[in-house]
Image 1 (cartoon, rainbow, N blue to C red):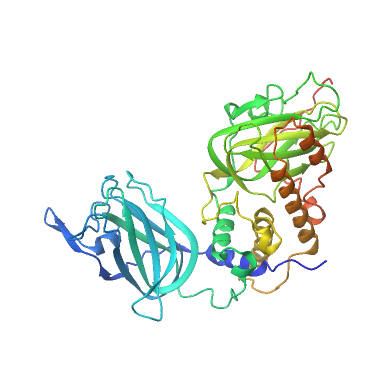
Image 2 (image 1 turned 135 degrees about the vertical axis):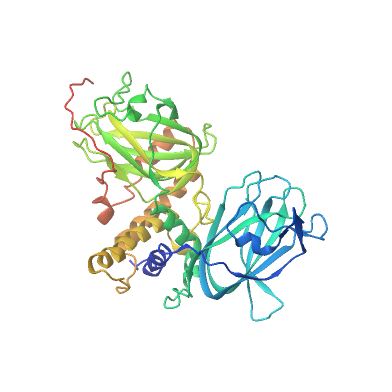
Length: 456
């Protein structure tokens, strides 16, 4: 079995990017479109976009409506590596930017190279908006405003770059990363960086999120281990118990925690976490197969997947005795909305170029980041040694995850579809070997041990 692709370089990238900050030094504006508008005696020139004051802004005049090529060129004074840009508009809904492109100069002084294009700038708000999914080093940057809300000239109150002076990437060989991944390495780095940031956290479950279940399931979100979900009234080996969650808006989830009752008989043995954009029958796509340990009332966490959806379904496909499951609490780790970084985690086909699902890649890089950070914290210095490939066991299990994912996408049907249930029963555990030892990781949450009498 061949070893998997190298993740060490990506992990190093993450550790570097995590040290980036918002650059406070004001750059020099070397070029800008139009003639600055004068308002109440104040000249609204391009420098106003970098003065940190919301009441002043860059407002170019003298150009046609729908010009859509308003440009501003800045010089940082030295090579600078950036991975994010923040822009702030006045929020008047007339002059607000709707799209823009970030560029850097090429060897030809008359041409520019596109770094990233953003088309989701919100109007009607004067709050800073961050955009990422790139990683580039340059001294000079150009921002091209390609659209505004009404075609009128933009009013740009703030532009800020996130990164650090110099080129911290110069010692890393990134030449094959983009080819191996099939997507820009900067996007994966941005995604993993956010996954390890405070934006991803254990969500406070709300009973109203549960919009469908085999029986009333409010207990799994009541933050109490004294109560539990107990769907009685079904035959033994029913194996189709389910809970449907509507988060009210799309959430990106990368980890789920299940806290069984702990008596073995009613403990979940296998389950499938599924997601849907609409919650309609036939729209469910699987994200991960779950295999729980018996006889434990401690939360058991499952990772190695990532998806963005408003609707999520936990389908219990077996318990250790065939009797109904009894679950004390369920937890989701994630964030509101889609993760930054420019990756559509629901549609990306990373396995076509690398043999890995995006969830497997992210989880492996996160683990590698921890191995790099641990010695650095202990020794008070950075750790950059120890190149290695992804362990064979993780490679093998990732391929199983890919096969499983393709099967679920092909056979996506309602939960009660016996064909899907049969298929799901045949799927092996996604994570074995090293990852199996981590299934019992406890979320940052205190639980008290409770002994309860219960009935089948």
